[in-house]
Image (tube, rainbow, N blue to C red):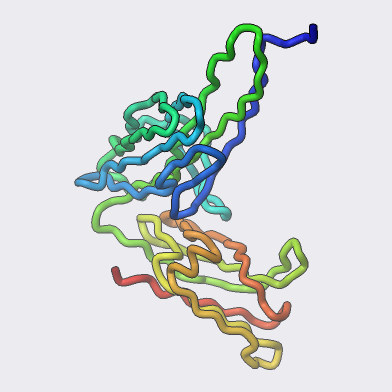
Length: 253
């Protein structure tokens, strides 16, 4: 009789995304994965929906942590926070079932600057029957959660643009974004115009992008309050060198 270990083997995979639609991995979805809250009023809370498409129940735990801004966008610090209240903090979802989780800001109502947090929906291991072995893949979905003050607006400008060589050897666009306001904003909440000229000053490339195109080709383009962000984009240029100019026009909505 072959040896069958009693202890299950666990593999944890973390999943983070800035997609505007539901995040799907195998048989679970979390939607939305980016939320914007305010320090007061009706927008202090939002509901996130989790759907279990597995053939078995899943057990979930919802955790909160502070986040910090980087050139890649935002990342968790690993420091837990009490600024966000989640309910329920744990749940078991039946096969084909859904679970609504409310995320509410309960921190300082008089923030000097907006903040960001990560809300992690963590799948917990289930008990394996005695004498059986199994490989459980446990997935963590991270919800990027911003908190701003009512009435505040970002002030994003492109302070510099240039070309850089991507990993595939192709010249691409690098943007330096500056937001000198007290609240965060998104590059996708506006339009972007990019122009490249060769050494003689001749225009060799021009691209005008709407907010939807920015979301699809670059991402949300989060810029925190007071942040200067160097953003490497996937926009391919026809040639290296020369000069690159970029202009951002915020939405009036």
